[in-house]
Length: 402
Image 1 (cartoon, one colour):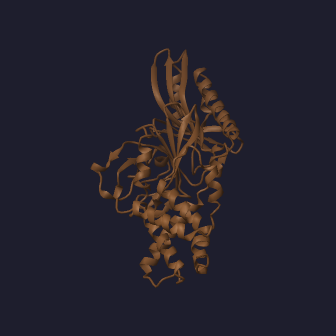
Image 2: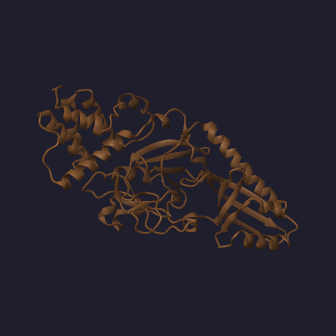
Image 3: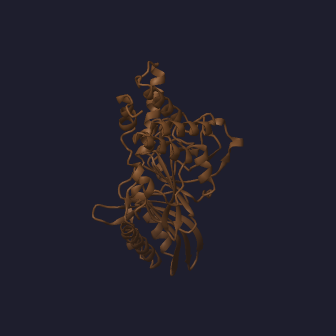
């Protein structure tokens, strides 16, 4: 049984990208994180096949298929192993359509195998999450380049990885620009509502979590489109191939249900990015402190009614959510501050995220309590800060809660 046709090795070792270091990684990954059980079973089967335990692999895969008859990738691997064990060619005479479907499923297998766990288990954190306010109990980060969704818990402002799952993205890839381009957006969003399967076509599976694309930055950049959701799959399939949606983020129904209870409508941030930079916590702390210092200096200038200094924190390219550019905004602020004799500005519940797809930009959100001699207001504010080449941080966009 160990003398399988040589092409089997191509399927298992090359087509599946020779990623069988999973055996060693499984021990490192045996922590509190939650993975898709079906995916874990499939990867274990492939690991057995790589070790030459073909009979055990086929038997275990048979059990998986019995439990998950709609898991098409598992069925493909089962069929290929059975053909290879018989000594026949791994490339049967099939139609072009079936060959395309097979290649798409093999891409799914490669993607699942390529998922690395070491960076997430050695004390590193995602560089994109600099600080999470207490209201954000969890955060979702989707690595569009590697088809992986990560769920993080908020532990005193620091993200802790809870679970990760294979995901499908848009047929056009990442970086949505216009309606109909079939791309998944890159950016930071939040869940706007939960739709259960009673109100959905079967395409969306057990439920959907729409996000607020396009956000204020998207609109400022001229991006169009709508209807970007995180949702499940039809019950006739366990998962979809890596690029198969119209721009949504799609995960298995089991995986959707496992994260649904961790989502708070209106607050849970969803970061859609291409690649995750796992860094030591000290690196995040350094950047967090740097950004907080800029925000505090901005607040202090405003509170001191130092309008000239205050306006230096706004980029020449600044635009407000009501359409004011920098000159119009400056004129407005000078007029408002002319009547002020006393200003107090308190900020709390500050969250800071690096903005994916933008050069040296962070998204800062906070609750703002403003009191002056003739006005008082409590607001939720979002600011997009960008670092210039000389290291200064300036606000490029400011809006009410986005």
